[in-house]
Length: 314
Ligand SMILES: Nc1ncnc2c1ncn2[C@@H]1O[C@H](COP(=O)(O)OP(=O)(O)O)[C@@H](O)[C@H]1O
Ligand SMILES: [Mg+2]
Image (tube, helix red, strand yellow):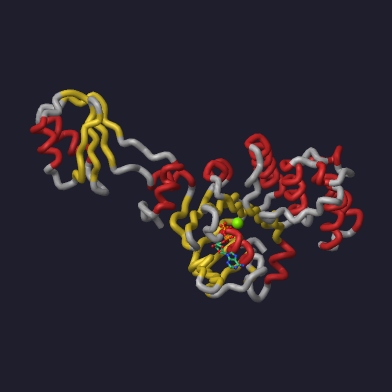
């Protein structure tokens, strides 16, 4: 099968009693991309992942993963998807090699193929030298890499990662992100990356969906999301901004508010306001404008605004 969409969710919900953990979300994940599933703690990311793998029954809506229905064909999904769970699910007393060996058997990989694959993954992730130590002696970063190897062991077509770098120190997190990107490229898998880390999503993902309290609040490429945060503000720097001119500007219909910022004047504008016309208006009334700026919000600011529900974006 070669669906264009690796995941399609339509109005998917899961309630736990009164808690609407996932509350009617819809989104599509194009195949062969790294897709970010972004949201703060408690947004419903892990619950969605459990739904997608058929580990939990939806309260409503529907979804397909790799073309399979999450309710009727969950077994097929679990065969063809790899999961790096939030709690990693590794056995601390077993060695790195033994952990992979165990999962290879669970997936019924034939012996020789299993051994070759384990060797390949451990080598590629720089874990081969220490493969025989119990992983309780390993660092958090190494354990996370092993969890990644485990998720990739059966050559899944879809890799689902639930907050893969949460709790790692910054250096290990960067290293793991690099591994992830390289692995995704080498293995040609679709990656569904759940994260509360904006920088991670920005760095790795071609597309993201942002969820909050079980609902989608924004969707698009990181660049498109940043565009949403294009503040409706015009900053004019220069001379000749008399009280009279400021009042004339404030009186224009497309100007919501106006304030002085040092030697500059900041105009808060209505959506779709014609900034060129405003500048011409100011110039015609005696302003000598040296600089005009439309400050752009950082993705971080957009994200915070989205989560506070100030920007309405779909
Ligand atoms: N098994 C459960 N029973 C009751 N509430 C749950 C259960 N699982 C998750 N929740 C609740 O659903 C919401 C979303 O949780 P979760 O999907 O774990 O969020 P995230 O992974 O984004 O941090 C939270 O309010 C959480 O307390
Ligand atoms: Mg979670």
